[in-house]
Length: 333
Image (cartoon, rainbow, N blue to C red; front, top):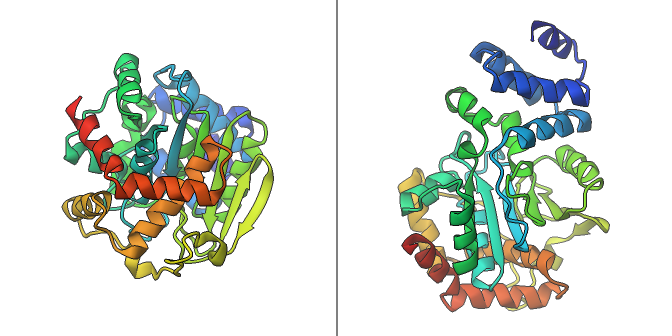
């Protein structure tokens, strides 16, 4: 490990095998907290290479607790986090809207380490019980259309470093890896990235897979579609630029969102109140439109409908109460 750190501090990069071996060593307790901090510092100073990300990912996927959920044509809506924007839980809300539209959602997430409220904090406080039991997750997908994979109970490596990540309180390399290590391996993924360079690296990696994906990056640095700026999107068909005008699908409510309108609360309790208010159809115009556009892009991974038609589906899910009913049914299981 000492030699690896020396090379990394000399601005050398790891091969795919070296990156994989590093995570394997971490899983065996052979890397101490100080070395973990050194690693996170290095990768906060530069973006990991494609080879490094692929190697890290291979190790995580080999070490994780496996669940076979491939019979479901599910989608994951997830972001890297760490954009320091303190938004409300946009991707989690979009998940319930998609499930309320009749589709299957298999979300992967964790507790916050660099934000106020992660998806796991939110769902736990609402009363959701985390599980890594395949039968339980299948039952949730079958009866409700939504299941949640809490990363630490699937990835033992994350438990080893959880205390260090929390103490640091900033975005780390593990934020970068989180969205690409869903143990359920969903067939479809809407992946938000706050860094354009990293978005392109993900794109290069996904080109060598059979995944159906959309990697999104808001030009002003959000890891979600926010309607605050234009957006880059990478799919199996290539790279596409969406202007903010194009993203305003609802012609009656076409707006440019002010970043202040997307701010989350000061604590988890406030974020839960915002979450429930929006899910109840009582959000502001800006809140609703941002959640709906993210759900729209996720739905477009699951069907061949136009963005306009999928926007209408998402809007019906939210306004009819079906999205909120998904949460109620999920918590009652």
